[in-house]
Figure 1: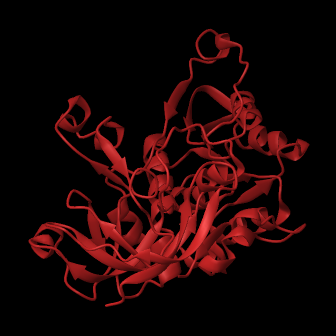
Figure 2: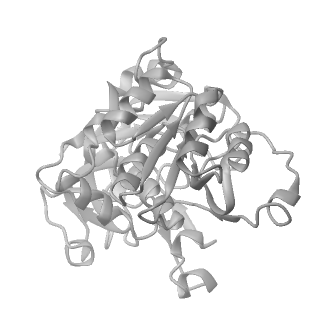
Length: 350
């Protein structure tokens, strides 16, 4: 096996990533698996680090990339039994590696524990030719029918599924999804499987609205289109939508949801926001008695994401629209879609 590899290291926030050709290939310790990375995605959080507006405090340097899929190349002592994998297996792993047995892990809320590492942040991630799955990682085999691109889409899709689960969609619901990034597009496809009465996407770009209609949305509108509110009110006899899934990360989209949701409706907040919202709190209680639910990460939903894609019920390949080499990482991170160009998920193929 080769001793050095190509990869990208983040040496600080604000365009301080560097491409390296001589990074040492890590060696797996007890319980660890070395995988050859097949594909690794770029997340909005990765772009925030690149632009210098990330809210987290991290230790540098590290290899980013928390959306990844890879083929097992070497196994440390006991790793095969621990993870249920063999050499040559295609795999994904949950990005969070939790430790200990705190209040949240005892209650099955392992994604909320304070005792965790994160591959692609506190641990080296997938923006390299090889990476390590730690002994405490949660690892899954990738079905043979899935492409590397679809397997790489598992992480955002698993997040989307968790958000849809938090919404508890019913058959007669009118459901609105705000935002058509990788998670929003996953929500459209997952929510469609819940067979709501109507499924509506709200997003500024026409290309994403058109794509959402192909992936399961019944209707799609720009946020400022007067026909959006008209359609919702016509469908609900003036009540407002039953469920509003906010996945855009825009505070204005959350405010729009407060306007569109019916009394006692459900709002799931799954975006990551740069700006604080100024909201009349009376709408939560006095005026509408709303059910506001947060959504964070993807507890127990990676296997569901893999299964739904393997059964052809969710199209992961349709959500991966652009592919780059590691050498071209600056172009990938700076990439902005042209007018009416469809851009959802951008990935690296090392």
